[in-house]
Image (cartoon, rainbow, N blue to C red; front, side, top):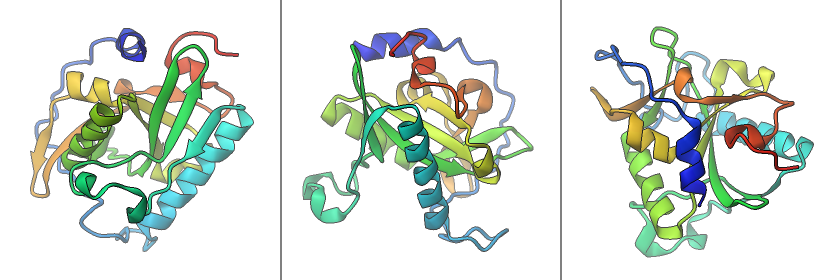
Length: 194
């Protein structure tokens, strides 16, 4: 039901000429070398901004407990749960993973690790809830703008690339739906929710 609506909102992506994108994997080092800031702390700040936006927009959401003891042993190393679930009137639920990522200005892309994409795909399949990424540029936390892209769109429309760190998905801002502080979540589906 939601999957059909998700596929309607995106136009076909432009041709990609970025064959030489070099990914800087956030899983390699937990500290950003350029600023010395702990990546986990940056992620928490991004989640806090997301919660503030959700409350400001009066969106029904809950944050998922990320502790290991709340997740089945059979899912470990194969499935990654999202940060939030959102209830949408007349549409059901979506799962949202908030990401605070570097904007690779040379290419205009965000980099998502292929392993994480496959673990999120496993979550979506097992729990039958569409997964979305709400990406906040690391250098733009103060602007409170989210770049939303669905997992289905990534899997259907974006070709993985390879670097010395392994496979990754380059997510162009053109692939995303930009949602500002005053924009509601209905912008993702081109419908009226309120």
